[in-house]
View 1 (tube, rainbow, N blue to C red):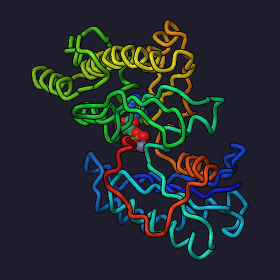
View 2 (view 1 turned 90 degrees about the vertical axis):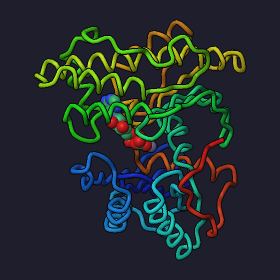
View 3 (view 1 turned 90 degrees about the horizontal axis):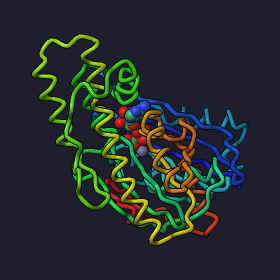
View 4 (view 1 turned 135 degrees about the vertical axis):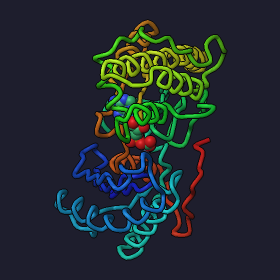
Length: 336
Ligand code: KG4
Ligand code: ZN
C-alpha cells in the first residue's frame, strides 16, 4: 500500500509518499521563508505561499518516488488543527486528487501525525507515553492505539517551542529560533541567571512558560546592552530552567502512565523541540531511572513534514478509517 501525504497546517508546504512497510519513497518539505521578516508566521502570507508551492511540492514528491498518481492507494492530508487558510489549501488539493483518481481520502489530525510517526521509523508498540513539544503544541499523551489517546497534561499558556522562539526573538536570534538558542546555550553558563522553575512543586503534568518568558524579558531589560556572552548565558540559563520543568512534569507523567500500564516500555518524544540535544540528554537520565526507553523519530521527521501525515494515513487506512469528501477543514481539533 502506498499513500500520498500532504501537510500545510503552518509554514511548511510538504508532500510525501510512504509505503506501508515503512519505506519513505519521498519526503519533500518546502519551508516558507516569507515570514522571517515578521518574527512569526503570518497566516495570510502562509496560505498564499501554500497555494503557490503545493503543486510543485507534490509533483516533486511523485517524481522522486518515481510513481504516478494512479499508483497511489489513498491520499491523506492534515485537516487540522492549524492555520485555517493553509489547512484548506492542503485539504482541497487532497480531495481534488482523491476525486479525480477515485482513491480514498483520509483526513489526518496533525497531532496524530506527530503522535504516530515514531512507529514509521522505530519498533514501538502501543501503549506508549508521548511528550509532544513543538511551536504550537506542548502536551503529554498516552497513546494506546490509533485514535486512542489520553491527555495527561498540557500547557496553560505558551508551548515549549514558542517560548524558545520568543527568547530567540528577544535576543535577536531570528525566527524560528529554538535551534539558535540551543546552539548559543552551549557557550553559556546555565547557572549564571536563576530563573523561576515554572509550576515548581505543583502536582500534575501541566506546563506553564509565560512566567519564565517574563523573567527572561526582565533580565534582558535589566542588563541593557547585551554582549555575546550575556546572550549565551541567558540562552543557557533559560534552557536549563525550561528543561528542569520538563523533567519534573515528565516524572509526574511517568507515574501516571505506569499506574495504567505498568509494562509500558517506551517514552516517545515528538515535535520540533525533540531536536534539542540538551533536553534529550537530560530526559534520558530520568527515563533510565524509570526503566523506560526513549524513542524519537529522526530529526527530519520531528519537525513538520508530510511523511508523518502519510504514515498516520496508512495507520488509519489499515483500520478502514477513511473520510468523506465532505470532511471540513478544522482550525481547532483537539485529539481528545
Ligand atoms: O513541529 P514543528 O516543526 O512545528 C510546530 O508544529 O510548531 O516545531 C517547530 C518548533 C519551533 O518552535 C522551533 O523553535 C522548535 O520547534 N525547535 C527547537 C529546536 N529545533 C526546533 N526548540 C528547541 N531546540 C531546538 N534544537
Ligand atoms: Zn507540528
